[in-house]
Image (cartoon, rainbow, N blue to C red; front, side):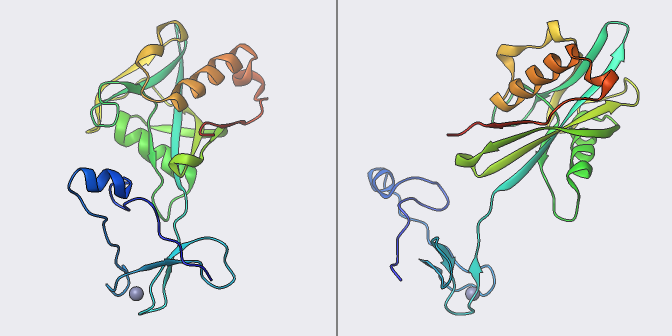
Length: 212
Ligand SMILES: [Zn+2]
């Protein structure tokens, strides 16, 4: 089976050309199981190049990461308001986002949405329906968005947030949103609100491919 070398550094994701020009070298990878160097090859019965350890026989598969976000909302005298966090970390420090983050092992997607909302926005929610699924294949991620009704208008900025605030649709800072995923989710949400989804519960999960 043909052995292919990857054309970028595993750690910096830069090409050998870029690295050489900047006085850097390709990073070597080692087996997390036994510490021996890995080779890149297509294992038997497979069709993709993997990191293979010939010392202990481990094949290191790389799979997409799942990011789970909530759309925390509450009905107030001003209408339906959505809770956004002002990021305190890179990337996109000082831009607004919905609470969310990488799913941890041994938790469900709903538990991840509740946990992230509590950690980033100090807000207790119960998750409702899965609202949107976004594929970001180039970034090796899948993003899920859950509707999340706030039990009460209580929230506080967590360590990764500078501020947390409720916004009506008219107040959403569209040009200050951290990621395109967030603006898509919010546009879908406010469009569906006009169709009465909170009253009739009828909507289709929004799916979108953002990276091709
Ligand atoms: Zn090994």
